[in-house]
Structure formats: structure tokens, C-alpha cells
Image (cartoon, rainbow, N blue to C red; front, top):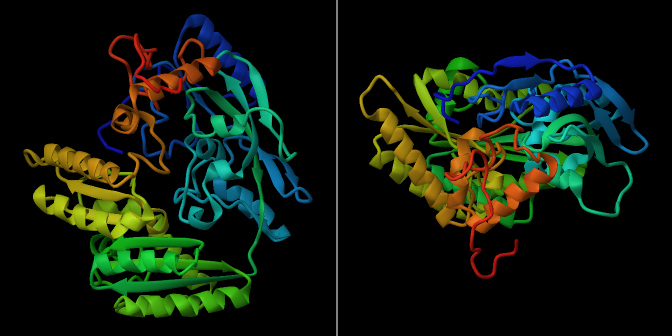
Length: 447
């Protein structure tokens, strides 16, 4: 996400029901006005912005828990419900909602579903789509539809799977039915520091190769640790080149055995220090540092560009070496805080737009990193979605036939392409919005 994106809607509406939301979409369709859905506005991809004006549909007043069904381990909520509020409401009964983007204290579940958000614990529990059983949407055609539900092995198309991650280009999410998980018996959080980011990267690969899947496996580099300690005082060790935050959860006997094995692996990869949180307060402070990292980056730089690219986990040591080379080549500081267990990178490219040429070098470094990830079999984006930020980058990863197929799918839900224009799919130079079928498709196309 780049900080220079700007845009404002012509009108903001705040519906209080699904019926009102669908009515707004129908009115906009009659007037052929773009519609921009918005949750809490915490996304990092420009997905909830209105650079072309139009009507912004803000879902913040639809923030109720509609049903908690513990026997079926699920809940139905309105889209504006804050992510953490659901776990707060169910934890006393022994349940929680697993997807936990770092912004979970302020981000909405509707926004999480729209972007298919991830989070530190998606290594073990999966991303948002793995937790959505069904959802209600006011489509771009103005229809109010429910897809999915509590029953397993439903017949027909997997429409919740299609709609999650559509980023408002199909319609406005008006309700979400999600899974609930039992609160694990035990939780253990370890912190390990290393003298090199390569040693930390090799440790990540070794832990997974050993058959252990931690609940979370996060990495922070020296620059990021310094900013966190100056701003939050989370107790991270200063001076180390890399820090791993490793969390295990499950049966106590199992996590104790896994923790002992992880300590052996860390020492085998030259860990400088190993620490285990001693109580809930210490554990919460370690996570406070990690989850509020983006908020303290201002201590390092006046401007920054946040990347969200992915590599296969086995290529993590290689991409970290390449990142150091790119950083040196473009004479810029990279601060790293990312989901190492998933191979989901979040380098923060620091620059000062008051210095001539630095913004351009930051963009070039960003492009170089993205292409390096693709060359290693990765993706141009991970948990943050596509939005405005990555829409024009999709042709790096997909063929024209693939993008045309996605555009045609979109028109099933949004026949006039008025929903969240300019997001998710690149604009085609020959049309106002979205890809159009090519005159001649390449051989072997699966459209």
C-alpha cells in the first residue's frame, strides 16, 4: 500500500439493514453511479477508497451479532462487527473466531470477508475463506441473496468461496455466517533472536520441516524491533538482526513437547536468545508489539511503501537474501515484519519524499521485489487483497484469458460493472472498466 493514494466519494450512506443496502444499490444502478462498499477502512490496498467518486456505502452501523449457535459452532454477524468483538462475546463460553488480522481490534468482519484477510494465526487455522460458512450480499444487480449455510457438503457451486475475496466488485456483504473454534487448552509463546535474518529464515523452514505447525510464526528484523521498542516497549531484544515470535496452542502436553523441540531447532540455527512468555500479560505485550508494528513505523521514516507479496515457504531464505540485495541496490532501508510461516512478506520500504529521487527508487525497489517473488513461484499479493494497489499488477501473474474469465464472472453479479470500480481487476485500455473478451483467445485457454 502506498500512502499517496487519494480519493473521496460524492455521497456517503450508512444503511442499518440489508434491505436498505440493497435499495441503495438499486438506486445507484438506476442512476448508473459507482458504489464503493466500506467497512472500518483499515485495508492496506486502497480497496475501500473512491478515487472516481460515486456513492460510498459504509457498513459501520450494521455491527450486531445476529446469532451465536454454539451446538453448531457458528455465528452470524452483520458486516460492520469488529473482528475482536466476536471472540470477546464467545470466549466465556469456550469459543473464539480464529481469523485475526493485525487490525482485528478495529477491522470489520465484512471487510475481512471482502478481502479474504489473513493474520498471524492463519498458519494453523487458515484464512477468512476457511471460516465463512455462508453470507448474504446485495449484488450489483440489486438482488439480496444468501449463499451457503450451516449444513455441510451443500449441493451446487461453492458460492461463498467465490464471493469471499471479491473486494466489493460483486456487491455489498450484508451478513456473514462464520465458524467458531474451541479455545485451546494451552498456549505457549516463544521469542527467539538471531544474529542474521538468514539464520532466522532457515529456522522457520526447519520448524515446518520437522512436522510442527505453530499457531503463529512471525519474523521481525532489527529496524522493526527498534521502532517497536521505542514506541511500545514490548520487551523485544534490541540489537539482534532478526526475531522470531512463535506461538503454539492445543493440548498442554503436546505444546510442551513441541516447545522443547523448537528450542532445539532454534539453538541448532545459532539463536542468540530464547525466551518463553511466563504469563498472559507478558504474552499479550509481545503480541501488542507485533500487531501494532505498522503504527510505529513513523519513528523510522516520514514515508513508506508496504509490500504484500508471497513466496513458497521453502524459498524464504532465498527471498530474504534477494531483499537485502534490492535494499542495497536502491539505497533504501527495508523494515520487515511478516508471517514467516506462510511465506507472506510485508517489507516496509522506507523513503523520504522530500529527497529528490527517493520516491522513484522506492517504487523501483517495490517492483523488483514483486518480480523476484513471482520468479520464485510466489504471488503479487497475499492476505491484503488486490484493491487499487495491485489491480494493475495482476497481468504479471495471470494471462489475459485468466483475467477475462474473472471479468466475465464479475458481470454475473454486477452486470453494469458499477461495484467498486478500479479495484481487483485491471482496467482494460479499450473499455471503461475491466477486461473484455479478447478477439482471439490463445490456444489451450480454459474460458
